[in-house]
Structure formats: structure tokens, C-alpha cells
Image (tube, rainbow, N blue to C red; front, side, top):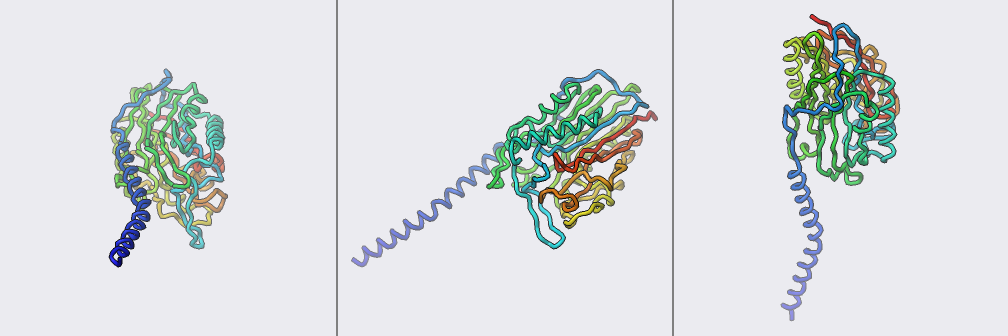
Length: 378
């Protein structure tokens, strides 16, 4: 009888252990299956990929004429003043750590509102060239609003080029508000003929988890014929964020520098516009009022980092209007960390000025920057 009771006890214990372990095993199995799903769906777009130019124009650029360009990261329509993003972290002056809340936009209506607001700002600027970043075409995070089509429809008289730089399987994180599957990229628009366009792949962090969550970073190289026989090499760029220490961004800058120098030495005009995810100069790195500490993820780009013939174009109002706000907390002017990470690099044969446009971050966590330029024949 005693042996039977012992056997029953052991059997009961085994049953309890199985019951307790079952959910754990299910979770582990689900995690393994999910990681396999992410790995199977992971890929990088090949470097030097040719891009289609839609609705291309006939007009050709001339030297000695004045043109304008705008760069604007529209933040997939999510970043109104009330928005904070789960990957953004920071620290208040008193040491309180901060982290954003949302994985996707608050609502489809907010995406549509912010996209339309950004379009209206761009229309007011009436530029010859538009270089936009974080433009979604079919993403859970933006409720499948096709921002690229909305922008192209609003600027139907422009030629356009789209380069995909974010193509992820379903990102089931944060668990409370998953980012989801994403298809997004760089949208460039032009009133002038684009001879050809190419997608260049930036180096990225290929570590096991990061490669699933980061973008397939790239820049778009557009070649526009100029009447003097040379070309304007117009580049739309979006460099890495969330790169503590700036190691990946340093490799990306090395590639971009090599392209710019080669084109300038060949006699071409070079303009790079975009979101550099670097403070464009030491002065703007800590040049704005804030109640937050200087973030650990911020790197600084200086003229010493540029190759021969290329200049960081400093906006005339750079210390008056920031172009990027920290999205670890909702936006309150004078509270969030702000700086200038958006702007232009130009070759020495381009005479130019820049202006940061103050939208008070109404439609994105970025402000647009407007370039006025002239191609100077040497």
C-alpha cells in the first residue's frame, strides 16, 4: 500500500510539473517559430539597384539659374506633438529615464491628417525638388495609408523616384502595440529630367535581433543632365539612428563620402539632402533650450568629416529653428531635446543657402529644410 501511495504522489507531481511546463514550452516553441519566420523573410536589397523614374520631365537644368529643394522626414504620418515612439529613450535633467510609448501611429485618421499637413507645408514651399524620408506605402504602423501615392497625386506635375529602405515581416513588438509589417522608403520628386536613378545600400548592423528591427538603409542617387554637359548628382539619404557610438553611421558616411568625392572630381554638381541622424555641427548639438540631458545616441557631423570639395551647408537660422525633436516624450517646446539633423551637403561648384522651416513639429518629429541653389560652371 505504501508503494502504491508513493507512486501516486510521484505521478501527481509529474502531472503538475507537466501542467506548469506546458505554457512555458508553448511560449518557447512560439518564439522559435517566430524567429524562424523572421529569418526566412529577412533579406537586403542588392546594392546598385536601378530605380524607375515615373512621370519623368523634359526640362533640363542650366548653370546660373536659381533652383530650390526641400528635404523632409515625414515620420510615416505618426509623429504629431502627442506622439512618442517606443524605440526612443532619453533622460530628464533630474535623471528620470524616459521612453516612448507607441509602436505604430495612434490612428489611421492621425496618419491621414499628418500626411495631408506635410503635403500642404511642401506645397507652400513650392520647391523644384522634394526629398522625403519615412514614406510608407503599405505598413501596419500607418494603417496601410499609401503615403507615397498621396504625395505623388498632390505633386502630379513632378517626376518621382521611390527607393524602398524598410521591408520587414511582422514585428510583434512592443507587445502592447506591435509595429507590424512595414513597406516604406525614400520618395524623391523633380520638376526636371532625371537621366537615371540608382539605389545604393548603406552598411547596416547585421547582428541577430537588430537586423530584423532596423531599416535596410540606403540612399537614392539621381543623375540630372545639365546643359553644360555635366550632371547634377542629387542624393536623397537617410542614415541610421539607434546607433550608440555612431559606428554604423561612420561606415555609412565613408560610403557616402566616396560617392560624393568621385562625382565632384568628375566635374559633376553634387547635392545630398536628407536625415543624417547626426547633429550637423557642434553648435546645434546643444544649441537649443531643453529640460533633457544630451542623448547618448547622438553623434555630431563636422566639416572635418567631409571629403574634398564637399561642404555641410549650415542653415542661416540653424540656431533658431531645430529640425528634429526627441520622441521619447510627447512634444512640449523647450522641454524635449531638439537639434538639427536634417539638411544638405553641397559640392563647391554649387552656390547655396539653406533655411530650416518652422512647423513646430506639427506633422512629424522633423521640420523641413529648404535649399536655394545655383549651379556654377567652373
